Length: 345
Image 1 (tube, rainbow, N blue to C red):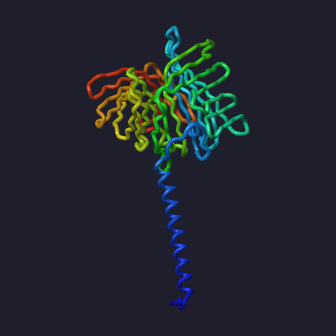
Image 2: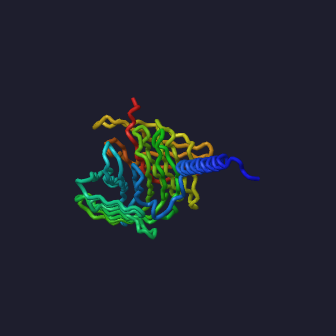
Image 3: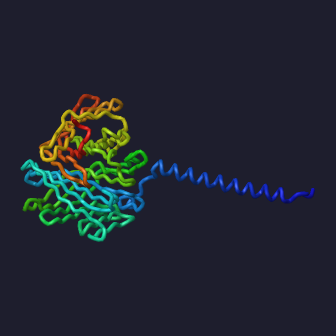
């Protein structure tokens, strides 16, 4: 039979192609949205390094070190790059806890484009801020830090003892997210020039890396990086004003890990510093009714207030204890990195 009106068939086929195009485009959008909401698997060495699409990126090391003579130090290292305080900048902070003299010192270098030399390498970790370097061998070797700030220098190697744990996406605002992973425990060796003396050090530490949207000021998290004597490691992100950020990584002694989003956090003490009148919450207790444990965190000695990216933080080594469901307790060491709480009376 001959089609008496070929225009009808042509219009029908055109509409089908349009509908198919709309369907495929909609499917593409759905895939993109799903991929953005459900973070894709980590890829190394690529995800160790800089992400070009990120507004903000940070790498942190919290370490506990000792000389062969028993002298103990804590060294916390922060590298960052991105949009901060209204400008694009990069920089580093180092805080040294001297347990012998019960004191802290901090060192920093801020890099602003056109005024200083900064190199970011995409595809592997290589952050170079005026020859202060954080890098990792592309074949998955040690993380390496080399910092020289005149009266302070450190050459540090971090050898992962546990596999990196994908913490996933963490809210840093009502519409903003950071992607986060951490290496819960690593072996650390270091050479350090501090207070006019050279030290050879070894110990353990936690490494964490996050990138994505610039955190909103009300969504900045406190960080608790904890090691226990039974080789359990815990990393906690907590905010009293923005609870969406609350996340806890527990890495058990056998290397298995859990991510908790629901837990209680209570501070028993408020510290008010005379120099600035800034206030911080201390002596923390974390509980998880679902997993049946309680963690107690107390400062080892007087901490130090520092200005980091224009905000006040209180950073301190601490003593920690975890009580598990069997009633047994285990001691350990940790670092707390707590932001100034403007809501305290």
